[in-house]
Length: 153
Image (cartoon, rainbow, N blue to C red; front, top):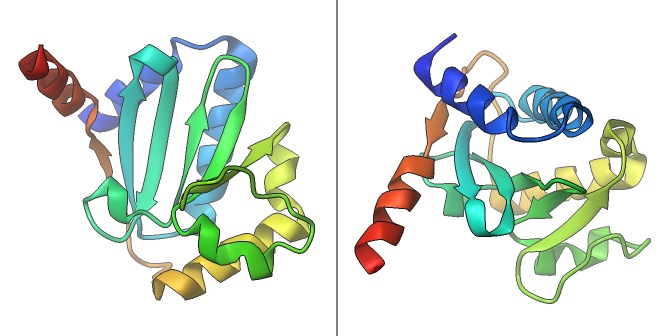
């Protein structure tokens, strides 16, 4: 395991086993669906959330989508969610900001046709070309978050 993978495993370990299993399975599905993208990891302690953004660059804010693992829920976020409304006839997307999300109750929810339509539309909107042979890396931003928070105080 790489150092980043070890750190990520320690972040997952803070959740109950069912949520860890859910989060790791969803991560595997997103990695398979979005090959070559960077995984940028954030920890929001005040919200008790682990967030992994899937980005073509090393910047999480340029991510195509992300998921947030909380103690009681998992949400799949779309960075350009407000622009995906035409691709969401079932009105799955929630939220009012540009970033919208879908609550996932099980890992199988990710495989639903409506979610795939949103993923495909998000890829098209972002103009991201996926490369199945590329290997994206894991970038831990959690420590940088802590440093920024300490400086603000």
